[in-house]
Length: 507
Image 1 (cartoon, rainbow, N blue to C red):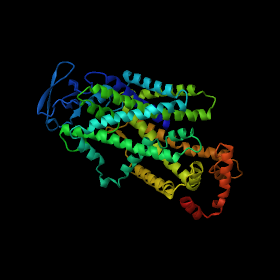
Image 2: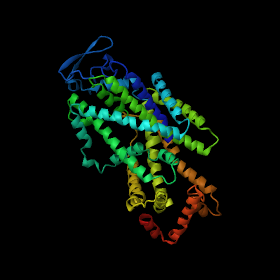
Image 3: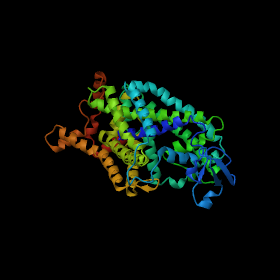
Image 4: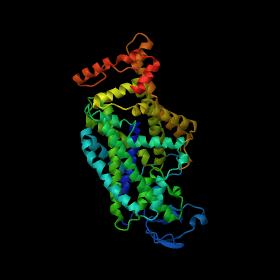
């Protein structure tokens, strides 16, 4: 799952790299309309286009095109910004559907993909320590650019309406399971929950590292960053709605990759002084963020392989994964690439992460046990875990996520991209990817039971659901103390079923 995520993540970095190079052009290539884009195109750059009529220099053939302020009424078409046309027509060269295939890769995006994977390899070729040092720059620099963009966004006319639209709650949606599914998915991606990255990084920590402190800092900063990004993007969308002349901010919201490659470039085009500088900084920031995220995902894959095959050298493994991933990524930089990206993201990442995340919660909460998990954490960091966390881990979180999953499948509708359905072979591919990821759990459970020593099947199953004898701290002294604490807490064995449940909640 995390490997599939990494392969299409770098295709997005390829798009960013392309925009980064184009940002040095004057004027910015997405700031003005081209004649071939039709009369429903509107310049992203400020040109007093809200007048009843105006003429626009085409910047290419010398032709002039007439744009009317009442275009949507006269032609019954949606006014589309030049930044959106540029992304769809020039960069993606997007197909209407993929019934006849996805097409050949765009060579300019192929170069961006090559640069992206080369950067990943150079950072991770020496292991996690080298990528950790790079993280100081990868993590801090984007905040500087976000602050600049936020200041610019809030000074645009109409930005206040967009920000109010962002923070004003719609209470009727609070009981909509689709909203909760979207929220859970966002948290998974934002915090890399159930992608293996956190477990991989934590395996390099000291045994007594204060994970409680880290968890609180990371989640708080993540929320803070999301708010900054939200204020910025909805300030821009508010300005876009203001210029189009609509009060409905929702009509100008562009989701998915459109946020990065349509709305932000549209705002940068409105900078009066050297928009190229802000454009370069913005896409450099995005590239750094994308590389930083994928370093974690690729390192996770490398660590998993080298844990199983220690004889493989770090740089050999990193190089092999980068080369294979590059060739897989070619599918994403074709005219039908966004169709494939959306398909893999839905079936190969979001769905698998949600299912495996729920299973992980039940295993930690009720197989390993919240009570023992809390005692392990207390043994490691010296802080007792409160009942709030016990109830969340044992009941609230797995219960809510299970209900969300059930509702999701009960109301499942076939995936579409831009309201265009996929061909049957694409749906078959998607469900195959999901099945391959989810079936890892029962397959390896059976393998564990078969390998477990014991005379009867019941003994094998019971033993497979118990920690192995070597489980615990690697340090001999800590392991001895850990085993003593477990021996002193053997009261659970004599409890009834209800007593075990009660102890799991309360300790």
